[in-house]
Image (cartoon, rainbow, N blue to C red; front, side, top):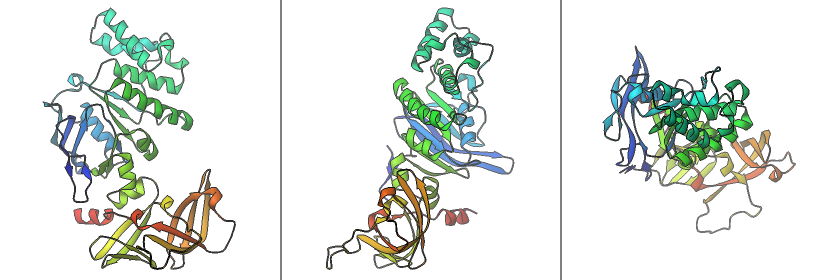
Length: 377
């Protein structure tokens, strides 16, 4: 079973008896260039896991190791009790959908989908049946006789999926397959792809650098940074409870508050709030939407916890319209610059300093990622 960390959160990268795929201490070096460092991860049967990271983080290299196109420098990959990394790609029940769909332009949709089965010399009736089944799953049956050039980018993406599904893999790897689509179609395909994964019940490992895409589609997100796993958690947990400053900044926006903790109180500039952390330096993540315009009445004198809501005055320095919300950059009376997201209709039309507040519970302690990297070097 998965273990529990000191912070009380489930460490979902640890081995689990229900895992389909087990990645064990995998590292990859290209000469002196270390691309992956000691990656250990368990992926469950039927899970939608997203490997998220910026360019150069090692996410595509990890995917290629799972597919068999690269060999790990060290470590092992297992699939339900069977060693996977020692097998050639064609013997693995793993299929890959690439960023460029690589459909054969001279073949029809159904010929593209059935090509792998033909190469495997499956009987004609079996090919016909399995191609029809795969096209039905991606809702492309009516385009069976069409050529790829006659269908849209979104439809081509579905055909690439059908071509992978027709082989009945245990694991489907997707290497940024939505990146070539326009914004509206991309959002539509995110929903469709997630629904399809639920319908077919196959484990999906999806690679992307798009944080919003990962949040919308995933059961869990594995965030890679410079070849190391920064955090593995559900989208809600990784957003609301980031483990490190890098995670907090990479997933959405945040304010990083460097505080001094003394006797259960954190102090950052003129902001003061209660904390259970021990005395010393600490770092907190405070999401912009957790800061709001303060209510008119101040906290009652002698209330049970007068520091539960932390109030401060600030002057608006910059404002960006985002439809239903505005993203504000403000400067507190003590000179602290903060980012705040509030409903557009809530912002008063005034140049005067405004009063804001946030809850102490929304200031989440995080590890300083930069200090972690210094220690490693």
